Length: 170
Ligand code: FEO
Image 1: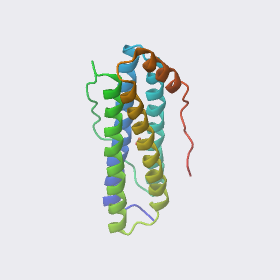
Image 2 (image 1 turned 180 degrees about the vertical axis):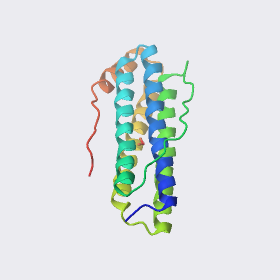
Image 3 (image 1 turned 135 degrees about the horizontal axis):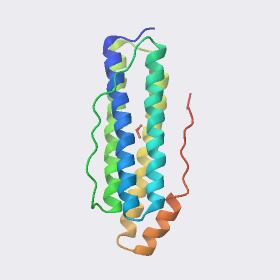
Image 4 (image 1 turned 60 degrees about the horizontal axis):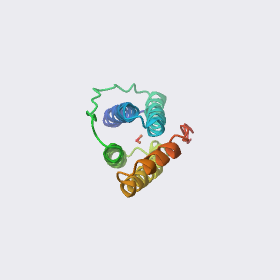
């Protein structure tokens, strides 16, 4: 089924949001590397790559259904001088925003009677649950560590072992 104009616009907005997420994570990676927390920086870079995959999934879906998404303006916040816990809190806040956008896309699909996008949206609902839980746990552990330098370096080392999960999920 071809995408309706409403769904096409909603997908373009979601593509822009996923690409914004990617740039937000890259900006967070830059700030963490500037603070010599290279493991946390590499964790953020891996997440930036995953967000590119998320955008690509929506782009492919739209193209398969006769629509060409339009990427909108991408803006990134300034993170200079923020602490590691503040940087991960910023990541969590952005994930919560993306989760709400996925829910809204779901509602739009329902009102448009668009069943074809439901499997893709189900994948994203699961993915958002997982991402919020993962980032939330890191925020919790960073809060426990507080200003303890050796605890921070231990977490930096643990987070640096992450590799991007670019499973297509379909
Ligand atoms: Fe694709 Fe983390 O939102």
